[in-house]
Image 1 (cartoon, rainbow, N blue to C red):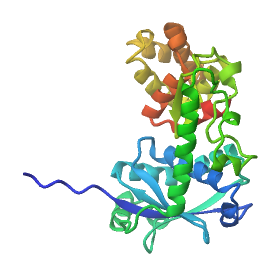
Image 2 (image 1 turned 45 degrees about the horizontal axis):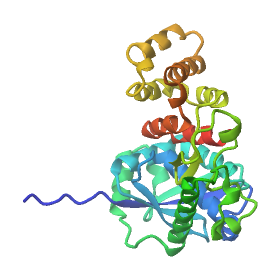
Image 3 (image 1 turned 60 degrees about the horizontal axis):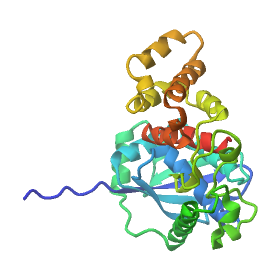
Length: 312
Protein backbone atom coordinates (compact mmCIF):
# COMPACT_ATOMS: atom_id res chain seq x y z
CA UNK A 1 0.00 0.00 0.00
CA UNK A 2 1.11 3.53 -0.71
CA UNK A 3 2.09 5.50 2.40
CA UNK A 4 -0.48 8.07 3.53
CA UNK A 5 0.69 11.62 2.90
CA UNK A 6 1.06 13.61 6.12
CA UNK A 7 -1.49 16.36 6.65
CA UNK A 8 -0.44 19.98 6.21
CA UNK A 9 0.01 21.66 9.60
CA UNK A 10 1.56 24.94 10.61
CA UNK A 11 1.10 27.76 13.08
CA UNK A 12 1.59 31.50 13.42
CA UNK A 13 1.26 34.10 16.16
CA UNK A 14 -1.01 37.08 15.54
CA UNK A 15 -0.50 40.00 17.93
CA UNK A 16 -3.23 42.65 18.04
CA UNK A 17 -3.24 46.06 19.70
CA UNK A 18 -5.86 48.80 19.75
CA UNK A 19 -5.30 52.54 19.69
CA UNK A 20 -8.01 53.14 22.30
CA UNK A 21 -8.16 50.21 24.72
CA UNK A 22 -5.82 47.69 26.31
CA UNK A 23 -7.08 44.41 24.87
CA UNK A 24 -5.08 42.40 27.40
CA UNK A 25 -6.95 44.04 30.28
CA UNK A 26 -10.28 43.92 28.47
CA UNK A 27 -9.93 40.20 27.76
CA UNK A 28 -9.51 39.47 31.47
CA UNK A 29 -12.96 40.96 32.11
CA UNK A 30 -15.38 38.04 32.42
CA UNK A 31 -18.13 40.14 30.84
CA UNK A 32 -16.05 40.77 27.71
CA UNK A 33 -14.05 37.59 27.17
CA UNK A 34 -16.64 35.54 25.28
CA UNK A 35 -17.62 38.51 23.12
CA UNK A 36 -13.99 39.20 22.18
CA UNK A 37 -13.40 35.53 21.40
CA UNK A 38 -16.45 35.35 19.15
CA UNK A 39 -15.36 38.52 17.31
CA UNK A 40 -11.94 36.94 16.75
CA UNK A 41 -13.47 33.70 15.44
CA UNK A 42 -15.74 35.52 12.98
CA UNK A 43 -12.87 37.69 11.77
CA UNK A 44 -10.74 34.61 11.09
CA UNK A 45 -13.67 33.03 9.22
CA UNK A 46 -13.81 36.15 7.04
CA UNK A 47 -10.07 35.91 6.43
CA UNK A 48 -9.94 32.22 5.54
CA UNK A 49 -13.42 31.40 4.28
CA UNK A 50 -15.79 28.92 5.93
CA UNK A 51 -15.13 25.22 6.33
CA UNK A 52 -12.31 25.00 8.88
CA UNK A 53 -8.60 24.82 8.17
CA UNK A 54 -7.74 27.42 10.83
CA UNK A 55 -8.30 27.40 14.57
CA UNK A 56 -7.28 29.35 17.65
CA UNK A 57 -4.98 27.31 19.92
CA UNK A 58 -4.30 29.92 22.58
CA UNK A 59 -5.12 33.52 23.47
CA UNK A 60 -2.24 35.36 25.13
CA UNK A 61 -3.19 37.97 27.70
CA UNK A 62 0.13 39.75 28.39
CA UNK A 63 0.85 41.02 24.87
CA UNK A 64 -2.60 40.37 23.43
CA UNK A 65 -2.34 37.82 20.66
CA UNK A 66 -3.38 34.45 19.28
CA UNK A 67 -1.61 31.29 18.33
CA UNK A 68 -3.26 30.06 15.14
CA UNK A 69 -3.10 26.52 13.82
CA UNK A 70 -3.53 25.95 10.08
CA UNK A 71 -4.42 22.52 8.71
CA UNK A 72 -4.92 23.51 5.07
CA UNK A 73 -2.34 25.34 3.01
CA UNK A 74 -5.00 27.02 0.87
CA UNK A 75 -6.67 28.50 3.98
CA UNK A 76 -3.28 29.67 5.23
CA UNK A 77 -2.65 31.45 1.94
CA UNK A 78 -6.08 33.10 2.08
CA UNK A 79 -5.32 34.27 5.60
CA UNK A 80 -2.03 35.81 4.46
CA UNK A 81 -3.78 37.57 1.58
CA UNK A 82 -6.45 38.97 3.90
CA UNK A 83 -3.81 40.07 6.39
CA UNK A 84 -1.70 41.83 3.76
CA UNK A 85 -4.65 43.49 2.01
CA UNK A 86 -6.17 44.86 5.23
CA UNK A 87 -9.34 42.75 4.98
CA UNK A 88 -8.57 41.05 8.29
CA UNK A 89 -8.20 44.40 10.00
CA UNK A 90 -11.54 45.58 8.58
CA UNK A 91 -13.18 42.34 9.71
CA UNK A 92 -11.86 42.83 13.25
CA UNK A 93 -13.27 46.36 13.39
CA UNK A 94 -16.63 45.16 12.06
CA UNK A 95 -17.02 42.19 14.41
CA UNK A 96 -15.74 44.00 17.49
CA UNK A 97 -18.35 46.70 16.84
CA UNK A 98 -21.07 44.06 16.41
CA UNK A 99 -20.12 42.57 19.77
CA UNK A 100 -20.11 46.06 21.39
CA UNK A 101 -16.42 45.78 22.24
CA UNK A 102 -14.90 49.28 22.49
CA UNK A 103 -12.26 49.72 19.80
CA UNK A 104 -11.74 51.88 16.74
CA UNK A 105 -8.62 50.62 14.96
CA UNK A 106 -6.09 47.83 15.25
CA UNK A 107 -2.36 47.39 14.74
CA UNK A 108 -1.23 43.84 14.05
CA UNK A 109 1.98 41.86 13.88
CA UNK A 110 2.33 38.34 12.46
CA UNK A 111 5.12 35.96 13.45
CA UNK A 112 6.12 32.35 12.83
CA UNK A 113 8.61 31.38 15.51
CA UNK A 114 11.22 34.14 15.61
CA UNK A 115 10.46 35.33 12.07
CA UNK A 116 8.35 38.49 11.63
CA UNK A 117 6.20 37.66 8.62
CA UNK A 118 5.23 41.31 8.08
CA UNK A 119 8.71 41.81 6.62
CA UNK A 120 8.23 39.17 3.93
CA UNK A 121 4.53 39.35 3.10
CA UNK A 122 5.45 40.07 -0.51
CA UNK A 123 6.93 36.54 -0.58
CA UNK A 124 3.95 34.33 0.29
CA UNK A 125 5.84 31.09 -0.39
CA UNK A 126 8.45 32.07 2.18
CA UNK A 127 5.71 32.90 4.68
CA UNK A 128 4.09 29.52 4.08
CA UNK A 129 7.47 27.80 4.55
CA UNK A 130 8.02 29.46 7.94
CA UNK A 131 4.45 28.75 9.09
CA UNK A 132 4.79 25.10 8.05
CA UNK A 133 8.14 24.83 9.87
CA UNK A 134 6.50 26.19 13.04
CA UNK A 135 4.22 23.22 13.71
CA UNK A 136 2.36 23.49 17.03
CA UNK A 137 3.63 21.21 19.77
CA UNK A 138 0.56 21.36 22.01
CA UNK A 139 -3.21 20.98 21.85
CA UNK A 140 -5.79 23.72 22.22
CA UNK A 141 -5.48 25.71 25.44
CA UNK A 142 -7.95 24.85 28.22
CA UNK A 143 -9.39 28.39 28.30
CA UNK A 144 -10.02 28.32 24.55
CA UNK A 145 -11.61 24.87 24.85
CA UNK A 146 -13.90 26.25 27.57
CA UNK A 147 -14.97 29.17 25.36
CA UNK A 148 -15.65 26.81 22.45
CA UNK A 149 -17.68 24.60 24.77
CA UNK A 150 -19.68 27.58 26.02
CA UNK A 151 -20.59 28.48 22.45
CA UNK A 152 -21.48 24.88 21.55
CA UNK A 153 -23.63 24.56 24.68
CA UNK A 154 -25.60 27.69 23.82
CA UNK A 155 -26.08 26.44 20.26
CA UNK A 156 -27.40 23.10 21.53
CA UNK A 157 -29.74 24.74 24.04
CA UNK A 158 -31.11 27.14 21.47
CA UNK A 159 -31.45 24.36 18.91
CA UNK A 160 -33.49 22.29 21.36
CA UNK A 161 -35.77 25.28 21.97
CA UNK A 162 -36.21 25.70 18.22
CA UNK A 163 -37.45 22.12 17.98
CA UNK A 164 -40.04 22.59 20.73
CA UNK A 165 -43.67 22.63 19.52
CA UNK A 166 -44.69 25.61 21.58
CA UNK A 167 -41.52 27.68 21.85
CA UNK A 168 -40.73 30.52 19.49
CA UNK A 169 -37.10 30.93 18.38
CA UNK A 170 -37.37 34.66 18.55
CA UNK A 171 -34.33 35.70 20.52
CA UNK A 172 -31.81 34.98 23.22
CA UNK A 173 -33.96 36.17 26.11
CA UNK A 174 -35.43 32.68 26.32
CA UNK A 175 -32.01 30.96 26.26
CA UNK A 176 -29.95 30.99 29.45
CA UNK A 177 -26.50 29.56 30.11
CA UNK A 178 -23.65 30.27 32.48
CA UNK A 179 -21.83 32.16 29.76
CA UNK A 180 -24.77 34.32 28.78
CA UNK A 181 -25.76 35.17 32.31
CA UNK A 182 -22.25 36.46 32.91
CA UNK A 183 -22.53 39.00 30.10
CA UNK A 184 -25.99 40.52 30.48
CA UNK A 185 -25.20 43.65 28.50
CA UNK A 186 -23.73 41.89 25.48
CA UNK A 187 -25.50 41.38 22.16
CA UNK A 188 -26.72 37.81 21.68
CA UNK A 189 -24.16 35.17 20.76
CA UNK A 190 -27.10 33.06 19.68
CA UNK A 191 -29.74 35.25 18.23
CA UNK A 192 -32.30 35.62 15.56
CA UNK A 193 -32.40 39.10 14.07
CA UNK A 194 -35.38 41.27 14.99
CA UNK A 195 -36.44 41.21 11.35
CA UNK A 196 -37.29 37.55 11.72
CA UNK A 197 -40.71 38.72 12.88
CA UNK A 198 -40.98 42.23 11.46
CA UNK A 199 -39.44 41.89 7.98
CA UNK A 200 -40.15 39.03 5.62
CA UNK A 201 -42.70 36.30 6.15
CA UNK A 202 -42.20 34.10 9.22
CA UNK A 203 -41.69 30.39 8.58
CA UNK A 204 -42.62 27.45 10.86
CA UNK A 205 -41.04 27.76 14.31
CA UNK A 206 -38.79 24.72 13.90
CA UNK A 207 -37.06 26.27 10.87
CA UNK A 208 -33.77 27.52 12.26
CA UNK A 209 -30.40 27.56 10.54
CA UNK A 210 -26.83 27.84 11.76
CA UNK A 211 -24.23 30.39 10.70
CA UNK A 212 -20.79 30.53 12.32
CA UNK A 213 -22.01 28.66 15.41
CA UNK A 214 -25.08 30.88 15.84
CA UNK A 215 -28.70 29.86 15.25
CA UNK A 216 -31.15 32.17 13.45
CA UNK A 217 -34.82 31.89 12.58
CA UNK A 218 -35.37 31.23 8.89
CA UNK A 219 -37.70 33.47 6.89
CA UNK A 220 -38.50 34.66 3.41
CA UNK A 221 -36.11 37.35 2.17
CA UNK A 222 -37.33 40.84 3.01
CA UNK A 223 -37.03 44.16 1.20
CA UNK A 224 -34.29 45.17 3.63
CA UNK A 225 -32.39 41.92 2.96
CA UNK A 226 -32.68 42.65 -0.74
CA UNK A 227 -31.28 46.16 -0.38
CA UNK A 228 -28.50 45.14 2.04
CA UNK A 229 -27.37 42.36 -0.27
CA UNK A 230 -27.17 44.68 -3.29
CA UNK A 231 -25.19 47.23 -1.27
CA UNK A 232 -22.66 44.80 0.16
CA UNK A 233 -22.00 42.08 -2.42
CA UNK A 234 -20.31 44.36 -4.98
CA UNK A 235 -18.69 42.73 -8.00
CA UNK A 236 -19.23 39.28 -6.45
CA UNK A 237 -22.92 39.31 -7.42
CA UNK A 238 -22.25 37.16 -10.49
CA UNK A 239 -20.45 34.55 -8.40
CA UNK A 240 -23.45 34.35 -6.06
CA UNK A 241 -25.85 34.23 -8.99
CA UNK A 242 -24.02 31.31 -10.61
CA UNK A 243 -24.30 29.27 -7.41
CA UNK A 244 -28.00 30.17 -7.04
CA UNK A 245 -28.73 29.23 -10.67
CA UNK A 246 -27.93 25.57 -9.89
CA UNK A 247 -31.22 25.34 -7.99
CA UNK A 248 -33.17 28.27 -9.47
CA UNK A 249 -34.74 28.02 -12.92
CA UNK A 250 -35.16 31.76 -13.17
CA UNK A 251 -31.39 32.31 -13.09
CA UNK A 252 -30.42 29.66 -15.59
CA UNK A 253 -28.28 30.63 -18.58
CA UNK A 254 -28.32 33.26 -20.03
CA UNK A 255 -30.19 35.17 -17.25
CA UNK A 256 -27.10 36.37 -15.37
CA UNK A 257 -25.29 37.51 -18.53
CA UNK A 258 -28.44 39.31 -19.64
CA UNK A 259 -28.67 41.17 -16.31
CA UNK A 260 -25.00 42.15 -16.54
CA UNK A 261 -25.55 43.57 -20.04
CA UNK A 262 -28.92 45.25 -19.47
CA UNK A 263 -27.91 47.04 -16.26
CA UNK A 264 -24.26 47.74 -17.02
CA UNK A 265 -24.79 51.50 -17.02
CA UNK A 266 -26.65 51.44 -13.70
CA UNK A 267 -23.71 49.81 -11.94
CA UNK A 268 -23.03 46.96 -9.52
CA UNK A 269 -25.81 47.78 -7.04
CA UNK A 270 -28.53 47.56 -9.67
CA UNK A 271 -27.07 44.41 -11.24
CA UNK A 272 -26.97 42.68 -7.85
CA UNK A 273 -30.46 43.97 -7.03
CA UNK A 274 -31.95 42.67 -10.29
CA UNK A 275 -30.26 39.29 -9.94
CA UNK A 276 -31.69 38.74 -6.44
CA UNK A 277 -35.07 40.10 -7.58
CA UNK A 278 -35.19 37.43 -10.29
CA UNK A 279 -34.36 34.80 -7.66
CA UNK A 280 -37.11 36.05 -5.33
CA UNK A 281 -39.71 36.26 -8.12
CA UNK A 282 -38.83 32.78 -9.38
CA UNK A 283 -38.65 31.01 -6.02
CA UNK A 284 -41.41 32.77 -4.05
CA UNK A 285 -41.60 31.46 -0.48
CA UNK A 286 -38.56 29.27 -1.17
CA UNK A 287 -36.41 32.41 -1.47
CA UNK A 288 -35.30 32.28 2.16
CA UNK A 289 -32.53 33.98 4.11
CA UNK A 290 -31.00 30.59 5.00
CA UNK A 291 -30.71 29.68 1.33
CA UNK A 292 -28.91 32.91 0.51
CA UNK A 293 -26.61 32.61 3.54
CA UNK A 294 -25.60 29.08 2.52
CA UNK A 295 -24.74 30.31 -0.97
CA UNK A 296 -22.68 33.18 0.48
CA UNK A 297 -20.82 30.69 2.70
CA UNK A 298 -20.15 28.45 -0.30
CA UNK A 299 -18.89 31.52 -2.19
CA UNK A 300 -16.66 32.37 0.82
CA UNK A 301 -18.40 35.73 1.27
CA UNK A 302 -18.66 35.40 5.04
CA UNK A 303 -18.55 39.15 5.61
CA UNK A 304 -21.55 39.73 3.34
CA UNK A 305 -23.51 36.99 5.12
CA UNK A 306 -22.67 38.40 8.54
CA UNK A 307 -23.69 41.89 7.41
CA UNK A 308 -27.07 40.60 6.18
CA UNK A 309 -27.81 38.90 9.49
CA UNK A 310 -26.63 41.74 11.71
CA UNK A 311 -28.00 44.75 9.81
CA UNK A 312 -31.65 43.84 10.24
